Length: 266
Image (tube, rainbow, N blue to C red; front, side, top):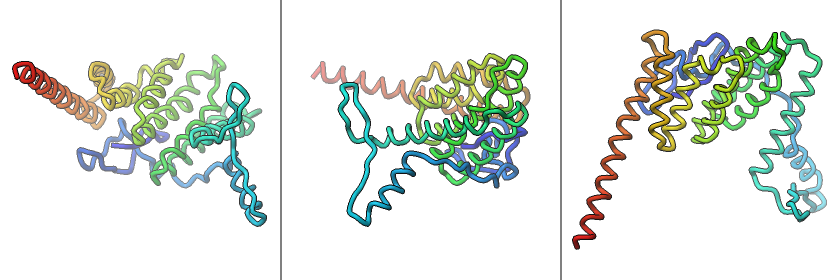
């Protein structure tokens, strides 16, 4: 299952995971057809600027590269990670400038459009690009006490859940956990009441073999499921997978133990 959250907590698109085709409307929502069609945000990033400069200079045999300054002042070629970080920083800054001066309602509507654009990228399998767009939606989060709860529910929590889902699809367990931790720390308590947050963090923990923590999260998600439906069945599948992994880990440990005993006797 690999789906992202839409506006009303429903999903129209079935996807396929290790267990076959499933339709989990609440736990793993995909980019809803209803939310697709939003135009991609128009960003201008350092990578784009660099490409433009190199295209221009190609005619004269020149080129430009992005460099990073070390603590001692030495300049070294930037890594792909450095470039991605610089691009994301530019996107966040440009997004913050875009929402500056907007009313709360306008920010919520703007964040929804960003989420729609991210959903389009997610549906196309462009998970890293979708993550960047979901990240920019977070600049619309309000810290005003009167607006905080609604902001968390309509802006912060959906974006963080979608970021966690992208990280799951990319196999980045540490980011899955980080995004879910952020959601759980929301002052309004919106994240703490969400079965999806605990479910996705549980999946992240399961990815790295932290079975004890994964079980705690998945059992908490099960308690938060309000009815016997897709949501509960998705959690139960992960708990079943966890049980199988624990058994296999025990068998592997026993095999290693027996091999060591054989070496000692030999």
